[in-house]
Length: 174
Image 1 (spheres, rainbow, N blue to C red):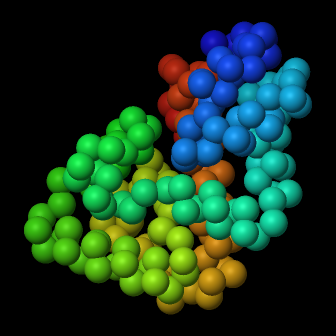
Image 2: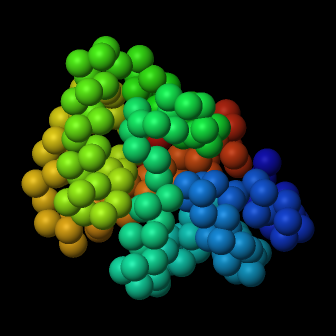
């Protein structure tokens, strides 16, 4: 799909197509639809990033709260979004040993208790070992630092999801 096809999408189709580039946040796609026409995929991405950056801290944390726990209940019950399910499976988060699963569950809970939102990392750019290491290390951050880091990771995720939708044959690199 080229950018002219993206620009030609009616509102409902645009929101249906791009509504999960930011996990479970179709409002983001709805808001940026009004910024059309986009000259390029980069400018569509920039419009989404600008929308996120303009949110108050509570809004940014709301975006973080829309993300599922890694290797958590949603993965086990099959209720993840198709994007998240594929991303977590590629990183091996659906094939943890019982010891790994227990450690990740404990760290996820510790992280959420400390920060009030789930751990967010761009799993497409990480393997299982790095994800678990990052989860453990990032539990030591301040809330402000972790909120900012989480939003950085959301932006990586949305870039790769946009590329997958608009440039399906691209290598999907940042």
